[in-house]
Length: 95
Image (cartoon, rainbow, N blue to C red; front, top):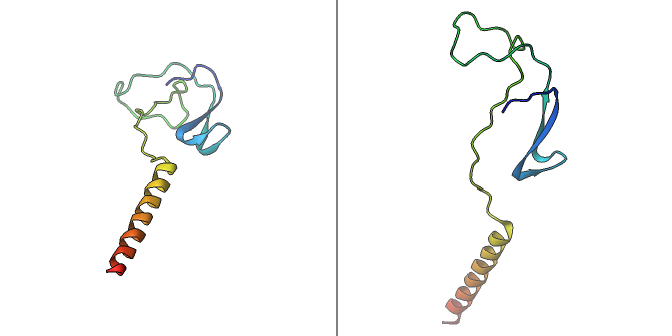
């Protein structure tokens, strides 16, 4: 992703964050750069220090599948297993 203008750009994780900086969220601060970015791997020579040349550039990561299991499903499964355990325990004691 390339930012064409300087500014602040908020972002957040759609599964673990929210607008306004809740959870997994942050802000990208873009300052003005000088010139155009050079292609990766080209040119050779000594690398320039941070902030020296090239425009503001950011790369995005690939989108990952949702890994969070919905809480109602976990709570329901836990209640079901607890009830089954209590029922089996009483049945065993009744013998």
